[in-house]
Image (cartoon, rainbow, N blue to C red; front, side, top):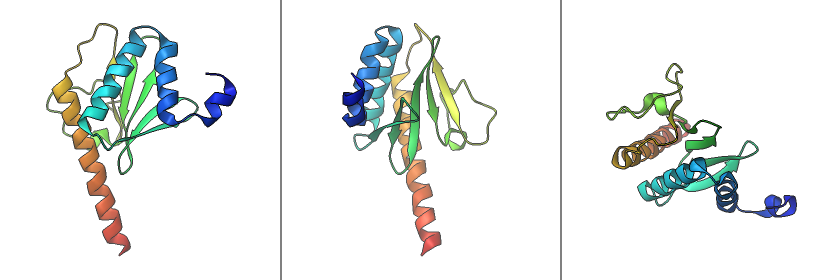
Length: 137
């Protein structure tokens, strides 16, 4: 995607292009995780922020999908407030707000647990939004 196309592209198109440009296990992993996010919440909105980071939102940021040389990192904006019975969070564990999952080449994605985590994050965003509205009223 050239610069002109990039400036007018939708967030979903930009994510497609990012996956294609990776052309390795990271692109495959990001594509698989993206599909699981969308399967867990068909109403999720894809965004493209911070100069090239895929973001999934529903009543606020659910998670971001960053790619690095050795990992694909999904950072959950309010992950510290989420139950994680399957123990998926393995990164950014010391913060008060965020939590992340680092996927390395060859890692198995625990699909059901991952989708449950997405649904829990969406529900938490909805609860926070409802509380915010009631405080304003």
